[in-house]
Length: 155
Image 1 (tube, rainbow, N blue to C red):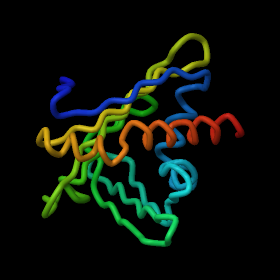
Image 2 (cartoon, rainbow, N blue to C red):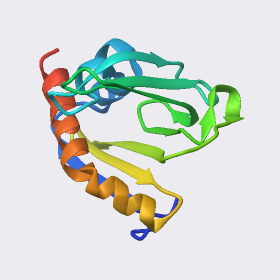
Image 3 (cartoon, one colour):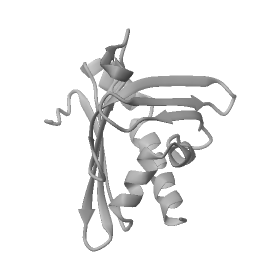
C-alpha cells in the first residue's frame, strides 16, 4: 500500500504496550466497544469475524442517542500485525451500494514491550479525504487511540 496524502489520512503513535494487547483491542468485540468511538460517543453494537471476507460491523451512538450503523468486511488479516477492512464490500466480498473508506491498521513491535501503531484511512477522492478530515479524523481517531491504550493498560 502506498500512502497518498491527497487521498489518505494517517495517525501514527508509539506506546509502551505489547502489540498483542493492541491486536486484542481491535479484534475482540467486547474490547472494541469500549474504545472505538471518542467519548461521549459510544459503540452500541459490534460484530467481528476477523478473517478475510468476514464481517466488520459497528453501530456508533451519538450523545443524543442517534445510531450510525457501519457494515463492511475484512480484506487482510495478519495476526498481531495488520488489519485491512472496508465498507466498500460487505461480508463475503459482496459489493456495497456506497463506500466511505478502507482502513489499514499496522501494529509493529517497538522496543522490548512497545508498539508502533499506524492507522490509515484510504479514500476514493480528495473530496472524501477532506470531508473525513473536517469530520475530525485526527482528533477523533487520536482520542479513540488514547482510549484503547487506557483500556489495555488497565487489563
